[in-house]
Amino acid sequence: EKITISVIKADVGGWPGHSRVHPALIERAKEVLSEAQKEGTLIDFYVTYAGDDLQLIMTHKKGVDSSEIHGLAWEAFKKATEVAKELGLYGAGQDLLKDAFSGNVRGLGPSVAEMEITLRKSEPIVTFHLDKTEPGAFNLPIFRMFADPFNTAGLVIDPKMHMGFRFEIWDIYDHKKVIMSSPEEMYDILALIGAKGRYVIKRVYPKKGHPIPEDEPVAVVSTEKLYEVAGEYVGKDDPVAIVRAQSGLPALGEVLEPFAFPHLVSGWMRGSHNGPLMPVPLKYATPTRFDGPPRAVALGWQISPEGKLIGPVDLFDDPAFDWARQKAMEITDYMRRHGPFEPHRLPLEEMEYTTLPGVLEKLKDRFEPVE
Ligand code: 13P
Ligand code: 13P
Ligand code: MG
Ligand code: MG
Ligand code: MG
Ligand code: MG
Figure 1 (cartoon, helix red, strand yellow):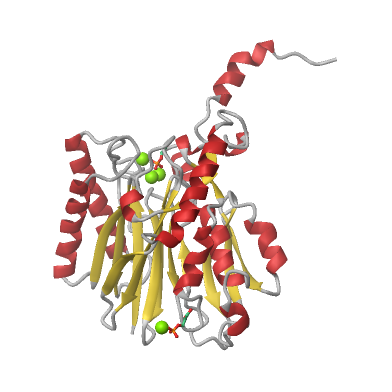
Figure 2 (cartoon, rainbow, N blue to C red; figure 1 turned 30 degrees about the horizontal axis):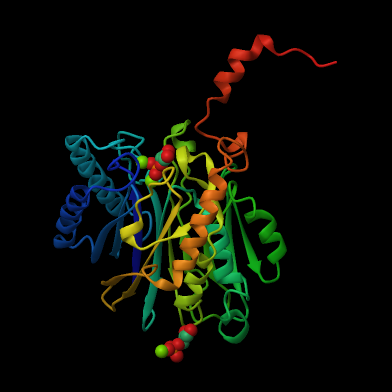
């Protein structure tokens, strides 16, 4: 029998500014999910935060895109928003962009990563929770986990992984997807996903012959684009992901290894800047400097045979990632010194929070042809 892991998150108010989630919001969301667990809708759940994003991690048997589970998440976010309003938190209800729930939270503002899986004898998973960045921030690390032999030794030395993996890549502007095979199409995959603002890895699948059934994802990333829902800048998308590990998949350490390099992602201040993705323990998932730099939290779990979440282990709470944090701070300083100049500030086409249309409008009559 299959179980489903759902990670659904939304920013329903920051404390202070866009820095972090107030504990009262977590408590309120826990009450809602706890009720659902008593009624048997959920097998298990955990509520946490990453920066100003409230994170619901749930296991159940309702499959992906279940209106019951999405409705529950929506209710938890609504109730937490009420608390955020009482406390006067910043941007209460920020990511709840539509008023009415209509069966699915996709397209309403929250971000979703879900997978329905047949539990293996032992099922280690990692949930990733990013703040101050966008879904494409996962392209580089997910590629390295499942396709880069310099990251994942198992691709070379584990016979179960040696055939590689399939990548489902979305064009998030044209709403199209393509399934591509690694290593055979590796260069074509990179040609797409290097353009991380447009082409986003949505899922990774095993190939035929792998112990995991071909149609069961081994990684899934949220790809919601808030800008597309709202039509204007309303904060970054702050994505989440679920990755399965071990036994023919990247080992836990191969899943975490890409984050030892704090690569540049877009987001940060006003969603309009490039900056390093800093791997942090939960206690430091509280973006401050220039509203950042962007943060990544990794929570480790074993799923019990009944579908219970055995965890979390706060995986970046480890001195092995100190250097990555140090490097991220060095990059932070370097990038910040560019002030309003590209490539610290995003190029125009990616600047969602922009005064530029207004500036251009104002100058419209003053522009004249050059000779
Ligand atoms: P164990 O032999 O401890 O299971 O380790 C295997 C492994 O995945 C190490 O990377
Ligand atoms: P959030 O998406 O995390 O709310 O960030 C908004 C922002 O503009 C930070 O400067
Ligand atoms: Mg916010
Ligand atoms: Mg956020
Ligand atoms: Mg956001
Ligand atoms: Mg061992």
